Length: 208
Image (cartoon, rainbow, N blue to C red; front, side, top):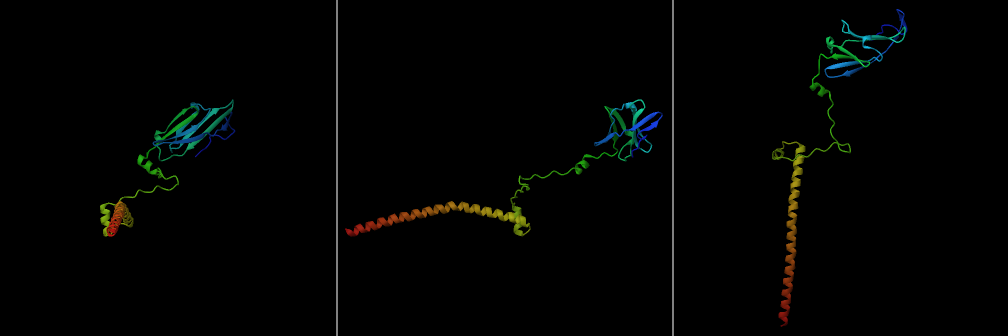
């Protein structure tokens, strides 16, 4: 709730009061909240800070502008159950009034971490999430697959593992086939040469 001690242009005891509306800001911290009231031109003796019996914070002040012209303000801050009103303190310096409100209930670090947002998972340059690494099936997984106790995803991994193993065996047998082919060709060539020599020898013998 906010109110003013006197209206703009009000006259009291030969004084003309002009309403001043100070700017207020809150600084929120873990154990204490601090209200900052900007009061340029005011002196410390011209400012009053009070807490009423109903725990309402009352900040007021007035200063002289000229002979009979005065500037005044009044701010009333309603109470909050989260503050320890007996420990409220005020400090003024360089045109700013600092009113500290110690808290009765201080949130612990665990509660603060729960309120924080979880970190965003990393992604690739195209905006798609990175692919998970494929897990190699263990012997236990293979036994479970034989008994029909594993999920379809695990069975698929085991089948892929078997295909890779079969392909490796085929790759290993390729050089052996190539060697056999070379030996077969050499055998044919040798046999051909031998047969040619035998025919030539038989022909010469018949001529004699």
